[in-house]
Length: 185
Image 1 (tube, rainbow, N blue to C red):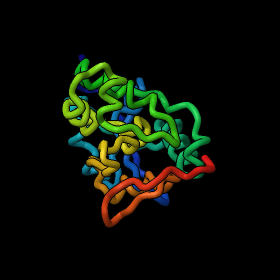
Image 2 (spheres, rainbow, N blue to C red):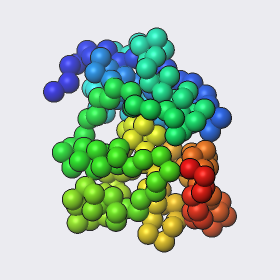
Image 3 (cartoon, helix red, strand yellow):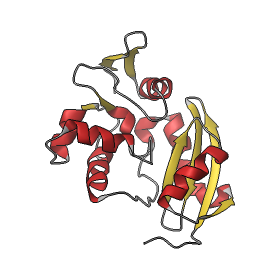
């Protein structure tokens, strides 16, 4: 149950692969929105924390912003995720937890993720992946179609391509397909 006047701290920061807007409660990060603004972030947060009291203060997002800075410098060295306040259905949480175990340098198909989440439907898993509120931290950009196609991405395919390339994945932008993982990873 959420508190009607729950405090939610918000801030944005730009990185080489795109802009990130973050929202966090006392428990941890509740929303990551890519390529957007604080104005765009608020409606997403209100779905998870109705009646939230927004506070623009990056100091309360220090842990999360530090994680994103490390990810920007070197994705393989960003370490432990920031504290999270994951809110979703039981099914979504199960899928997101399986998704959180996809390591840097690894790509999975929707079908493989469905098996990891003990779900018979890759389509249902794809819908849960699309509702992931914690992009990059819970790495939904590492999920691809069985035919090596990029699939979808809530932040847009251009950002998914930038994130995958940032992590050393070779992508054919014209065909929207993954070609290979970098071998030195």
